[in-house]
Length: 498
Ligand SMILES: Nc1ncnc2c1ncn2[C@@H]1O[C@H](COP(=O)(O)OP(=O)(O)O)[C@@H](O)[C@H]1O
Ligand SMILES: O=P(O)(O)OC[C@H]1O[C@](O)(COP(=O)(O)O)[C@@H](O)[C@@H]1O
Ligand SMILES: [Mg+2]
Image 1 (cartoon, rainbow, N blue to C red):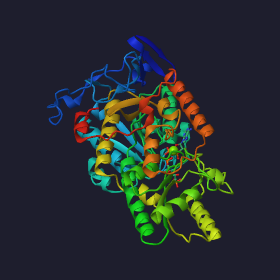
Image 2 (cartoon, rainbow, N blue to C red):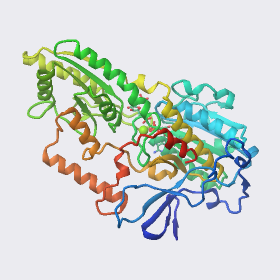
Image 3 (cartoon, rainbow, N blue to C red):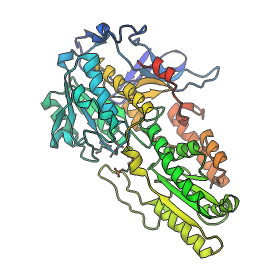
Image 4 (spheres, rainbow, N blue to C red):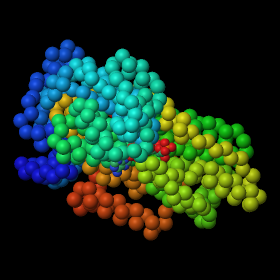
């Protein structure tokens, strides 16, 4: 096996095109670290499990749809408990931080990190960092015990608080070093994971025995590689309530139009899945598929047609769509550098009203519903709770086993450790030349808003992105299409150790 490693990538190559995109380990830069038997060996709850520890060579393929002659392709290290650990229980001093926007399930992840560390590994010193990255150097810390976190999964938000901006790498690592913290659990989205990657690099540069583990959070589902993000299922479910309300309102009045805005700054996954889940939606607009209002094949023409056919309609719109159409673009950023968005729901509602008022042919009744923050602030549902548990426990097993610089993530239904750079190198987006978007178009029968030229450009862009990722000739990587697998309870059981 050929091994190559730089500060970013640790690539291990095997036979038949096998590639392991491995994660760093503390022993990469601190040689001769002592190891200890995993305390789970004598844990009555776990010792009945037949295949108790994960084999050191277990890896998970990124691509599961293959052809007879396909190379074995990219793999990630399988998550789960190892026979040997690199920390003694009473040596561990862990901390947990939550950063970025809210997402259902944050409290569940915090709870399961604390309970996993304590119940599985006997760790008692766990600190919550207050208010995101800046909390490392400007806020208080909160001691966390299983008792403190017992009920928090029933609440939305994060008990630790969160923030945008304020990432000062050296102040954060100084604080980690000064407090004697040796395991850092960082829950957050793409920005947060970029921050985690630079914290890890600085820790490695200083030669500290500190494991850095990320848990990916994004309500928008815009993190690549992983099957889906926690809280997404809950968000899609909660969005149904708004869509139902819009449908009831629209249906009850002549030429009723219900417009619902959902989150999705750059990726329209919530809008797409909420639409597919509802079956009451006539038109779904997402940032990946630009649309236009006027003329042949435009939105106004479609609205008129649908109102004449059905007497009412529901439009679901992702918040990031059509920003370029709004007259004054904000051109402002939040503290983390994310683009601040205009309220496209309000804008589109007004444009529709103006258009039909001017026409004087079809008097419409439009109701605009914006449930975005209500969706983001709820607690996670049962399925997301189980998922959060697996992510948190996997992160704990990984850090105890000495892995570092990784994100805990579900790949093809298995828990894995993914190097930070794979999580941060690009955003996950709806591929509009894919079958899922085709399913949506066929279920709503809305216009694609794409002329043949735009369609061929979208295809070309998708192919070049795939080549970049696979190093293969335009072979579409199925795992990148984000056809989200519905995890059955038996899969959750068999995967309980990843
Ligand atoms: N490129 C980056 N390098 C270091 N820290 C970053 C980077 N991008 C974002 N961050 C930090 O990560 C945190 C969360 O980022 P943000 O984009 O707001 O949310 P999310 O992680 O959910 O995408 C913020 O504290 C921000 O300062
Ligand atoms: O008002 P805030 O907190 O800045 O959040 C708004 C944004 O947060 C999001 O939920 C995404 O947040 P993250 O980038 O933190 O994952 C977007 O959908 C939305 O545009
Ligand atoms: Mg983000």
